[in-house]
Length: 192
Image 1 (tube, rainbow, N blue to C red):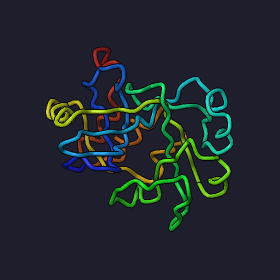
Image 2: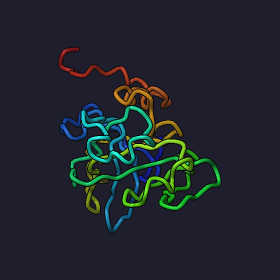
Image 3: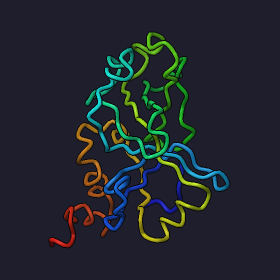
Image 4: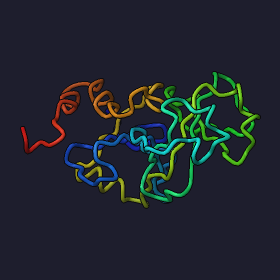
């Protein structure tokens, strides 16, 4: 388990976090600054809204499921796209995440105002998120101190996981030691 918040790392909700916005969520950290706060997107909350309904020109480029993901409770009327590109490429309309981890070295944000044609054939995978998760300076650190989040390393497939509903358990299951056992925690611990 990693010890500090970092761009490209994952925040995994602990079973005690019962905020409906983050319950059993897996958040990819996109920006982190001790003075400015933290920004990320929830990776495991697909919505019922198809990309075609909102951004039809990007629909063909989205990795399944072809829906908007609920990136978090902040600015839910805005969209943010993440895309992976083949190694060594930096196409127009795509900006690399500034992270030192191999898991996100090919990951970046997509300018959704750019014409999709300039990225056609240039990206390997893409997902679009409505809204994002954000914390002011010190807020996330306080939540971690209260036991609301685990900080773990991301793996290359996490952002575009084939079954978003099972990502929380999958991320926890691959951790070492006692943290792997948390994956077996029932949805309602009081029913245990």
